[in-house]
Length: 101
Image (cartoon, rainbow, N blue to C red):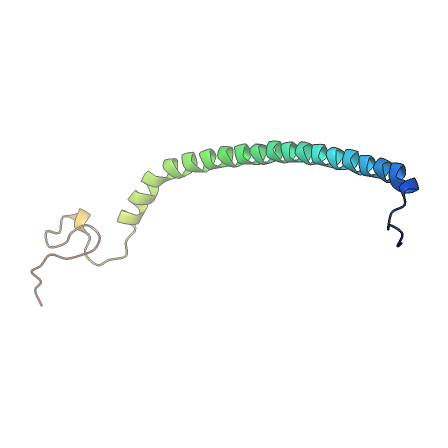
């Protein structure tokens, strides 16, 4: 008769090893959950910091926009300027449909 791979004498010891492994796996799962919580806290603080920076940049862009529009209109390098009273020119440097050669 062949002998079993695990002897009956070793059964209590293997049960202890199994219980120890089960406890270790539970501890690892708890630590993984704690680390996931810490990562969530860190990522939310980074997101809040990015939101603050976005707010600041939006305010700066909004404050600079009128000046940029005015500078772009009056700073165009075109021959005929519509704001000087020429009737054949339109805003943006385009001319009206009738042109004289």
